Each structure stands twice: as C-alpha cells, then as structure tokens.
Length: 292
Image 1 (tube, rainbow, N blue to C red):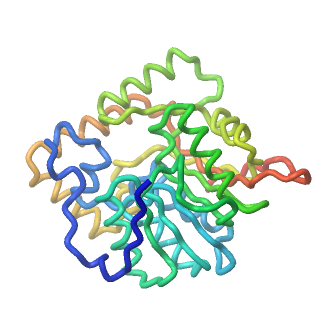
Image 2: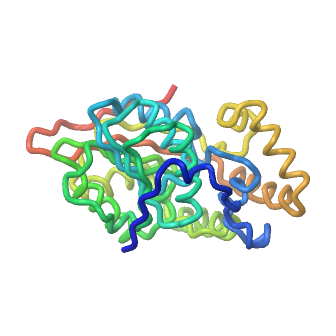
Image 3: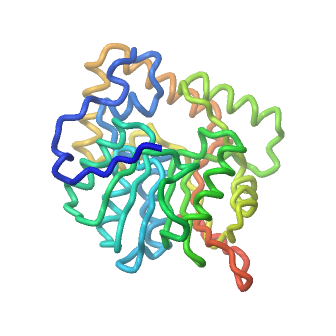
C-alpha cells in the first residue's frame, strides 16, 4: 500500500478536474457533478452530514479517520470542530489532492491524506475515536462493505463511533426483484455500480461488523433538485453549477437523465445516516431519530 502524506502547502497546486480525460456521457455521474462545480455529493445533502457530525459530538478529544473524503467538504466541517487529529483515506490520487486543498483552506496542522484502500488502511489498531464514511459503501459489494466496516471496527478505540451516510431503499419490505431493478437502473445511468439495501439492511451490515447502532436519520434523495442544490451549494454555487452544465457540451442532457432516474424511483429512494459505536458488553439498544 503506497502512503502519501502531503503538507497543506500543496493544497494550492492546480488540480485537474475529476474525469477530465473522460467523455461527459461516459464518466461517473458524481465526477461530472464535481467537474461542473458541485461540492456536496452526499445523498442526504449537507444537512444530513451536519446532523451526523453534531450528534456524533465531534470535538477536540477526537482522532478522526475519514474514508473517501473526495472533494473535502466533510473534511472541512470536521476540521472546523478542531479535532486532535485527522486522517483522510482516499484511493483516487486526484480526489486526494482535492481533499488536501480543503485541508489547506482550513489551515489545520495535524491533518493528512493517505493514498490507500478503506478496506486496508495503513494505520494501527485503535488509532481513531471517530471514523466517517459518506457515499462510498453504496458502490461496494456486500463482501467489500463488510470488509470496510470491519476495518472501521479495527481502527476504532473501544467505544469509538462510526458515522455513515449512504443511499438506501424503502420500505424495509421492498421485494428483491424491485431492488434489483432500481440498482440496475441507477448503475446504468450513473455509470457506477450501485449496491444498496434498506435501512434495515444497513443496520444489519453494521451490526455484523460488531457495531451497536445508536442513532439513525433518513432524508429524501433530492441530490439534483433545485431547493437541495441551493441549500447544499448556496445561491452562487448553485448558479455556477447550472451555468457550467449549460456551457459544457452534453452535460445538461446527462444530468437530466440522472435526475430522471432519481424521479422514476423517488418513492423507493432515500438517504440514510447512522451513528454506530464499537460495541461493548454494556452497549444499549439503538434509538431512531428522524431528521426534521
């Protein structure tokens, strides 16, 4: 495993856009959105991320590891809490550079980005009190999900928290044929393999890795809806994203296709956020807290 530890000064270097070498019609949808200027690429939006960080009580006592920090939006929010340390783990070298830019803007000294795989992190056991992962497990097979969750368990100190924010289907009783159809439609349009489950499935996957679920929130899947765009990016950011989409050949058509598939399955799609704790013998049952 190659490890990269870069200083914040490198965050000011010019970084080529994600997927710059790919055709607009072929690149993963989240890379296209990032290329057009979208900075929040989480299914439940910035509100769900903020809810998770608030209820996980991130603070100066924490050693934080974030899986797949991507563009560094969540990293910046985490670092605003002034944790003891921060390590991002990113397998895409260009995405790691974007995350480093976010660290550089915050100016936090005890932060670094490691180039590596979330299923095999080059850090010792019990090196974190908080592990964060958003919008990255939904693209993994069940076996890889379990490997990543097991790695989060290994990295956490006893009683440490694991925060996830992913795409889910609803209701829990959704039949397997409908789930397969939703996953196939999303994968074909987004150009990334989508492998999701119900909220109950996400619970069970985490519990299978030795976690006790403490809090759960759900939110509508409204990634490309105008109101969500403005809440996530601000008025200026949303306008810049739309302007870039209109001036980039083929981008608007591609985004319409992505939005259309979200609408097609709207009644069965949602974002789920969970705060889980590395289970100890005295762990209590879970408490569901819906997002207002």
